[in-house]
Image (cartoon, rainbow, N blue to C red; front, top):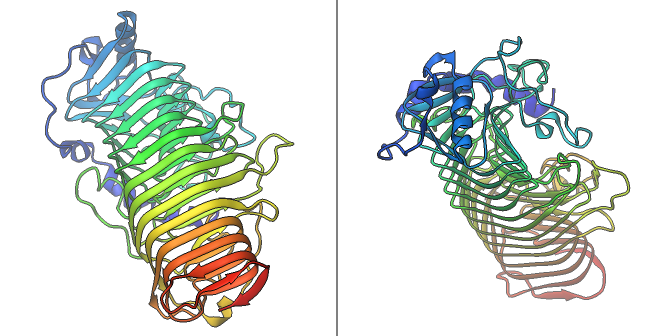
Length: 525
């Protein structure tokens, strides 16, 4: 088991204790939203809402009835609806009223007492099982248009698995009747997800693949693995969400090969969201906000990748808060083009990884013959990070394939520091094909930024502060062409280590002599 699996396995019980109380999880959801909408009431089709009777057959009848009428709203009054797979239909909204809980029932392993068959997976060779199947979910839709799920009720994935690598889950996640996602959508358009909560979402609280024109607004996701996975999607807005995902990523755009072809995720906006991995699962939904042990470093971040066959284009991330989780990661590993990314107005506290991780790699998990991808045209501004790991932020390509056109301005990074002079001498491995995470290179010889295989890097109004003295240079550059640094405030000690760097400028910085090198240089100052 890998390091992450060991941590996850050891803390499963903590989250489970907080999640096994549906009344508590749903009862503090906030004020009622007014009179129920007109439409189809699931109780009229035989749903018992007693938490024991399997209500999904009745619910699916209600959905079919609404669809046959040309669309409408399927209404869930207060109560706990134990379910296997609920199958969405075009032009149908599910509305969960205050106190309504859709509960993922435990599968029995005997048909029909379980979730739908996962079906074939076109891209199984290029991404893991969870990305490649959709039907084996609590709520599922494929090839639909004009669908919605609205709140303020709760979707509780108590009976879902989160994957084979975790000790508390079945050894065969593809077994009969096993479900692994709270909501899965494939090849849909015009989707609205608003005002509800997801507790214990399984492998993914939401997996949306090939979905166009989707709005995700005002969700609370309190889960045991990934929060919102947006894969091969276009024209997506994620706003006003609270996501607690201690054991995996919070918002995770991807561009996998799960559709059987490469499709980018593009025209994506993420704004006004709160990301954390610092709270026991269930305690965010119920309002108790119980923190994890101080030694635990939760995930909870925003990460583009690692699945990246189709790439990412036209993405904005703004006005978000990161609280005791990991930072922002932009990763293209499988031959795709990732470009035109704007990140702004972010605050971060207590990060277990550095604030920024930009990685162009050559894992190439996809069809043969695809060249190494590109990571370019990235702007990052107005970022405050306090109390982050001693690891520096990372901008790293591979030899012959630089990360290009990165502009970083108006940032304040407070690091724990403490790096030694011996560590400052280290030349980390390339690790071109390794799984991309900030610890992939081991401990690094810089305090603020580690930059390797890059072109056209500009930083201005950047301040690096360390909690304890650090002997490493603030910036470590290797194989970099065109690097401009303006108005820096850095810790005492070496400011730059340059190795095979050309077209370099640094000026206007306090306590640092202005310097310019047009030729290739290797020096420390």
